[in-house]
Image 1 (spheres, rainbow, N blue to C red):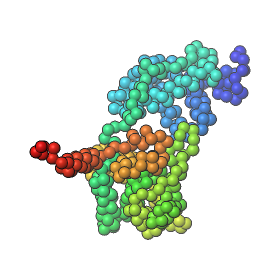
Image 2: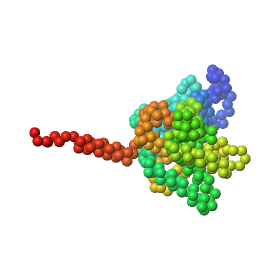
Image 3: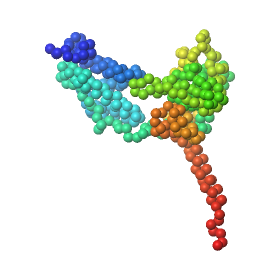
Length: 376
């Protein structure tokens, strides 16, 4: 009989004590492992949106190997990720998958969680780590994104916004009831660029998230945007930051939307979400991303461009316009200047103008010099 020395009530304790019914022990142990790993991650204060994809990935790896974790082998890792490479997955995606499965194997192979003892008793073997430095991807570069995921040029950006406005007018003239959604999404896309926001940050904005900036009174009540749903670090709550308004035109866009358009289709109490939806309190980030993709395709822009490129464009255009890099870094909420640098993709137009200015200045200075070949 196995001695009850594990934590009372824990999943391993139930298996070791013989108090858990084992109709299908392999499946029951695997699901209990996932539950335990889920609880471990929750205790680290990780979000459920982070944990669920990891659990799903572990189940997917099991289906691929057609075997349970205590029988996994390094060659299973090789074959699984070789197949994923055939699906043209991004390098960063593959490395993320490997990292997640590595953590799962660390958990079930750690003797402090007693899954090794459970498996030895039930199956005559135990789980072990199968992800190693020599069979997993390494992080070799600072930036692993696709090269085509770049900032839009100012002309491309203007064309995008003009196209979005045109869709509103076309829908209204034709009596299409989707005109309001088109109007909302056009304003949302402009907002994403005007304040350098991520998808979730845009979607989660509320009416109360704007305030005045005493150092820029010309912007009125839209001088500052308070972002409450910034990207969180591991195990932390969403980061908050304040973004100062820099584009005068963005104030006109926001005042028109909030003061004239926001409540046009609202019924009853005023919706506090900045971007209301007909079927839910607020539009989802997926809907905003799909709208951007629709307009991108219509304009013939590369498929790799996403809504996040508007944030890249914001950083790039501020740098091009001469804003201090530290100011830009604080505006977008980056902890490190190196991160902001990765977002900066100075346009060829800007480089051409810079080169032309340097050459013209050189020629001007040369013409101003005394003639070195004068008669002596």
